Image 1 (cartoon, rainbow over the protein chains, first blue to last red):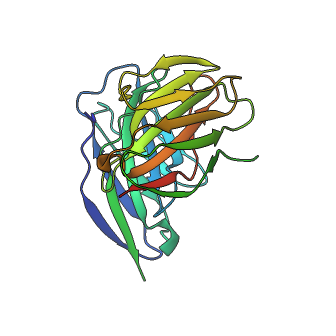
Image 2: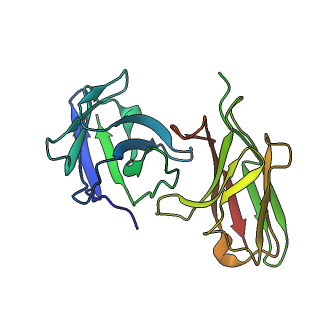
Image 3: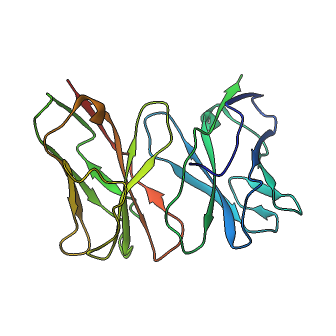
Length: 110
Length: 112
């Protein structure tokens, strides 16, 4: 079973920031938070991951709360091509069993 | 850098037939994974290889599914005989050691 809880779906206006929440209240000290997304008919695409500090890369920012029980993925300027299912996954660094839940279906609207 | 390659992209078979999927991981990635993704669900791990050895196949239905990675590079996943409930997308992923997994485009299987 997935160790995370995400909203089933969200909408976002094109050009605005998309903020996708994830709850992982049972996260352990050695577990990272990973985000992937899956665009229709493609394989999952890695976005970003973090342990306890906030992270940023060319795709997104990851904000992890101080107690690490929740996180938010931020797409700063959403485009129509960001429409996808976004998966939040918790896994230990040396554990390759990534438990995907159902994810959040993000729809970016013009 | 070339990504994970999979073939075929689509396959339609009748139940009780056999089918095989092929995966070529990213060059240098020692770890290879096969996932099954049923429509509307997230991917589920079937089997994990480290080089040519199996690390985890606890969720592989071994009565009908088999996988191999004989030379520690390419891998093949086989289903024999196929059932209707095997209709899904079969995803291959690879990683360098224990790090981030990178996925291929998947093979979409329809069993009639």
